[in-house]
Structure formats: C-alpha cells, structure tokens
Image (cartoon, rainbow, N blue to C red; front, top):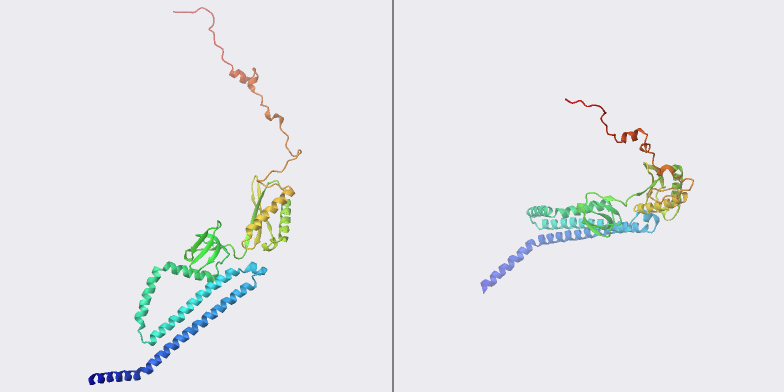
Length: 348
C-alpha cells in the first residue's frame, strides 16, 4: 500500500515538474498558433470584403447607365454583372487558398513538424492530379483568361468554331450558347481555339441590288441616295445606323445585269434588320421610279417601245428545186436509158 502511494506521489511529482518546466514553451506555441490563426482569419475576411466592395462598385457603375442611350449601346449590365461575379469568385478563392494555406504551413512549422516529406508528397499528388485532370485544369484556366480579357459575355453572338449562337451563360469551365434553332450548346472553354465575336464594336450592313444594264446609273444613284437619307432620319433607324448609308457603286457588271452595292455601319447585332429595311425601301423607291430590278416582274412595255412582228418570219425561203429548168433540178433528174445504133452486125 505504501509502495503504491509512493509511486503515485513520484508520478504526480514528475508530471508537475514536467509541466512546470515546459508550460512556458507550450504557452508560447499555443499563443503563436492562436495569433497565426487570428491574423489569417482577419486577413482573409478583409481581403474578401475588399473584393466584394470592388465588385459591387463595378456593378453599380454598370447599373447607373443601364437606362440611358449610352448604356444601351456600350454596356450590357447582365454581362458586366456575370463577368465581375466570376472575377470576384476567382479572386476570393485564390486569396483564401493562399492565406489559409500559408497559415497552415506556419502552424505546422510552429509545431516543429518536418514539412519536407509532406511537401514532397503534395508535389507528387499534385502532378498526378494534374495529369489525370488536365482537361479540367485547361478548361478552368481558359475560362479565367477569357473572363479577364473580356473576349465575350452574356448577350453576345459568337462563333466558337465547335458551335455558334448567343451567349446565355459564362462559366469558368463551360460556356452556354443558344443556337439559331433554339438549341442549347454546352461548350468547354478548353475546346474553344478561336472566337469570332459578332457583337463587339460595330457591324456592317451590305445590300446588293441587281438592275438591267440599260438603266441610267445617275438616276439609280439619286434614288438610292434619297432612300439612304430618308432612312437615316427615321426612328429607330437613326440610332441603329452609326454612319451614313453609302452607295459604293458597281460591284459586278454582266451581259444581263449589273449589281449596285450599298453599305452602312450599324450597331452590333442590328445589321440584319437594317439590311431588310433597306431592301424594302429600295424596292418601293425603284417601283415608283420605274427602275427594273433583275428577277422581279418586268415593267409593262408601251406600244411604241414594243417591237413590231416581222411578216416574213413565217415564210419559207424559195427553193432552187422548184424551177425544173434550174441546174439543181437537172442534176436530180433520172438518166434516160441508152439504145444501140441501127445497122448490120458483123459476126465471125
């Protein structure tokens, strides 16, 4: 009994001595870890709030001009919102990963854990994951650079090579397009090798008009210029046109027709509507000016302009064989049989 008490007393004494000797170090390590964690959490919160305020300010600037004419021409609020949200999400994730990752390594270093094998294992695991998920990494990186460079956004009409249509949603891995027939295309960002954006900057509306070669070119130019001036003054075409409608001249001259080309710089995505309206107005103006368009209904010809029929067109030309005394008739006459001459016949 006394031995057990003595052993217990020695154990408690040793434990108390060990704690007394090391409590300062433990307290130092604990306070250091706590300080690292607090600083990391506070820094992460500050960075995320700063990024959120930056994104909110960007969206607020887009919403301020959304209802104005300038906003309708230059700013797509939904596109700006999605782009800023995607950029903010990427930046917040990267900031959190860097801050928390650095804090975790500092905590492990404070606990005197050898980080060499851990970092080597993490490197090998990262290489293996990179090879296995290289398509995912490619899609993600392509999406990040696409958003940062603002190559396209929601509402743009693009040709991505593998598919074309209007951009419905932009993600870091997949871009969603709506085709001309209403279908939805899900295109991985890593598969997009080239992009043709039809909604950035300005577009060109081009109309070719085919007329007869006999028409007066000066008259055609005057009529087309009247159509162009009238369209530039009417609403809403005055906003859709970003430049004057120009009569470029003849683009093709053939034996049966000649082609006059008209061109205008328009708002992005409005070139097809402008082309349809131009064709409509040109057809009405040409009908009023009695200018014939190749392929349409021909104009009614007057009696003075109508060619007179040739009375000899249905009469056959005379034949040389109709005259029996002609050499042609003599050549076609049968040869008469020859009779032997009369007289004595001598025989041996």
